[in-house]
Amino acid sequence: MQNPLLRVLVVESQLLIAVEIEYILTEKLGCDVTLTTLARYEDALSDGPYDVVLVEAAPSWKANLARVEQIRAAGAAAVLLSSYEDFAEEAPSTAGLPKLEKPFDPADLIAIVREAASRRV
Image (cartoon, rainbow, N blue to C red; front, side, top):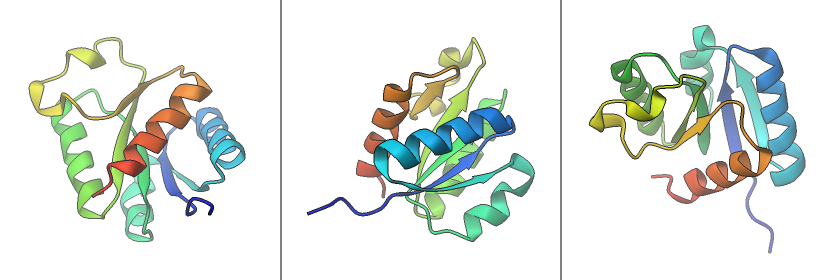
């Protein structure tokens, strides 16, 4: 029996990164991927439902925590995408959140999406 199709929302301001994520998840996992920007992310989230949301991290841990709570309230698992060097040093309230540092390895992307989907509430 095949795994159910994962619905993934990618919230990324850099188009090339977003398209790369879409390609990897579509080709390797067969995901249904929607791309959006931070400016349109709340509308896209409400258009769901999604299983996993990959969202560009903010420099503020409070903003990241708010985004994650909003994503979880919509019934999806959240993964933060970051290119901030000090991202791992964030406040304890964001410790343990799934994080994928850019640039990323495709295998790491696949693994973190699978992991997030399996822990979805």
